[in-house]
Image (cartoon, rainbow, N blue to C red; front, side):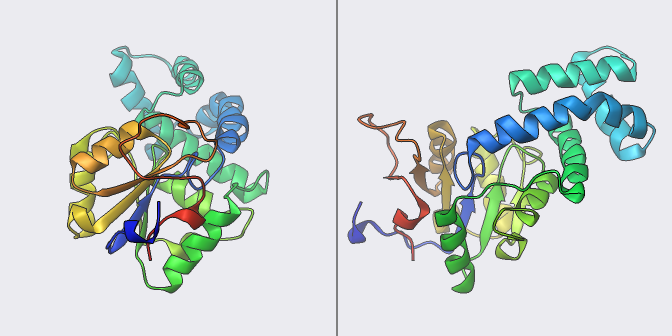
Length: 233
């Protein structure tokens, strides 16, 4: 990519895992943390309406009136499968909130992402997040990073309640929510299928290939290895 390959965009939409942040933090810290505490969390909070709503959504998904302890087992199985299920993501977010508030961990964000997001924010570029984790989990993530509270950088958060990440309709819905034309939005991700969907919706796209996983492959998107290389003002 070179200077001539710059996009004329008015907003940036970014994925988290593998893009702004290490996949290992999510898989090796957050997922095991939620799994180890799922049953206890449900036992303590299962009678509260926000939790009960998500537990009922799990029962509806499996088509059986399971007791709470069996619902916890289903959820742990979904964690092991890395299933992108909205009730799982919502409950994980609630558990992670407790961990962040106790100071059990801090979210990882790459230094180059912090620098570029900060520069964009300082220049007045609206920044948004789209991740399979719940919007609440996204806010918690960026509020408790190793670089400090980054939530002032962002204007909004989108999760799978707006639609699957590999469906073009989700990106049309996001553009409407952002009140911007798709062509004015740059989407950043480490997943080609997500970028394909965003491009089909009319967005500009860029593959953030931090581990050089796509070296030598034919990828129909501009490819960078760090945020510093993204050709966007």
